[in-house]
Image 1 (cartoon, rainbow, N blue to C red):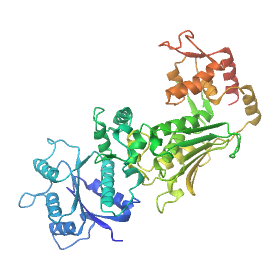
Image 2: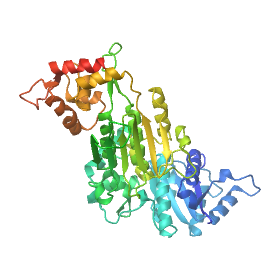
Image 3: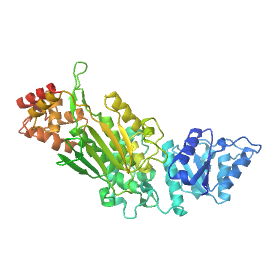
Image 4: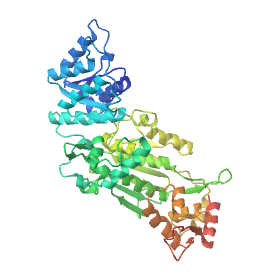
Length: 498
């Protein structure tokens, strides 16, 4: 199959880095790389022809003109016209498909002739704005996927970029969108304010196109995403032993948007892991750590949610055993990749870029291919066995728990605290003097307030390990919790059994 040629046009000195990254992205993306061949003048060998002649010839031989416009107008010829504008005019003359992408500079910040050029473009085309190279890649991805669909080169779009004919803006939770913008502003400097309309925000994120929502928009901000995608859920199970066998002490199925899935799953795993308290000799704060570092748990779960194959009927499965944590997600690595490559720094090639980008903006994931390499590095620093990545029918991540030592001491500790849940033990371990609920929750690195109240505070109160400072007024603004005599005894046993 002959690839579709794309002519990338811009002021070279202003966008040298962006041009090269976009070129490499178009070649390496699993979908776009099959259909498109980007052209950059700087990659051509030396030639006797003039630059302007070569430029215009390449425009004629290309099917798509892709223009990137910023602050500067660039070099001007004898008639005062820049090569970028010449190329746009030539593409228009030869009826080429044209996509133009603008930086977020204001009219005052741009060169006067650049503003005039942009006005000419706007009179003929719908153009998109971008703030970073990653924004540019996503905007180009969305435009090129639509091109393939309109030309009937592909019949089905990638899952995340496909529009959903059954969904409308009313199926999205606008409070979730506002909350996302607030978080993305603080984490990554997201350019739009919270007061922007839902359509403006979604359009900027390439999640809303010509009045239609993409599947990614529903998974990110839907009121009930599982109404549209029943398989978008996470199934979690906890086993006492090292095999999948009944009885299953704890089994949960989590639903919601992708952010909720990550938070709920993360807290399920953390609630079942051992938590140890260090010494306060060097700090007034309470040092503590989960047996598997929280960063590893979070990264593995986010990877599964962001990169899974949503066209598959299977669900993500998270299983915690006595010796390991396993996370299974439907999907496979990019073509030609090996699991060994994941253990080193590598290029990020998300399976669902329109889904992954908002998760990046909200601070859930990194974009530089560091995630799986970080899992390996942090595990090593924590003294854990090296994690495994396995590609079978599903993609599997295995993270090993710490080797259990001192079996007799451990059994004595378990016997002394038989009635205590894992959650109650953690509250007992971190409670020092009188503490507010939010402070206990912060120490344990948990985010879900309602889940913490139901799964941690209430059971620990019912077991008689803690008590309220104001028992007659549970909603007292200065309400705090402290250990009872029974709680102090349990804490001593737990600390001696570490």
